Length: 145
Image 1 (cartoon, rainbow, N blue to C red):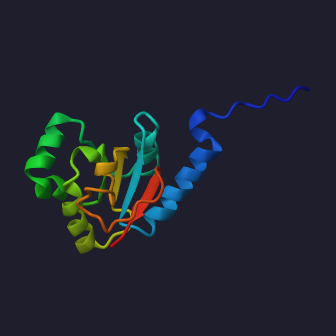
Image 2: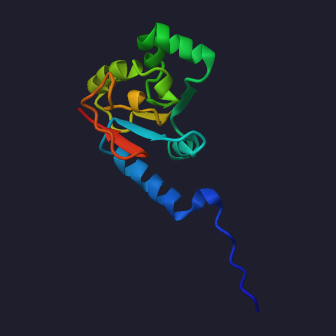
């Protein structure tokens, strides 16, 4: 009898499982988790799979982007159970508002941020509105005060 070993789906590779476990672990110890990296590298897909219970909003959507720019408090207040904020580098000023919100709420894994790698927009990087946040690597980071 011949044994056929099915190919592993690309999204179920060992690095994917490691990233999933890392995200789950970080969400237990940090209020904000960020996934950064090059465009089309699977950040959004990974975040939506791991945090499927969270609301999702893309800041590439012109209406959402405009709302976030003009009334960041109201924009963030919509997410009582936290959210995945995709392409957050488009609205870096949201990080200051987000910092205050998570400080008040005190919940771990509250917000998940994704963004393409752009040094000026990375949390904790040059020009960041939240320089005290630590950015680890170029893939996953947990933020704490």
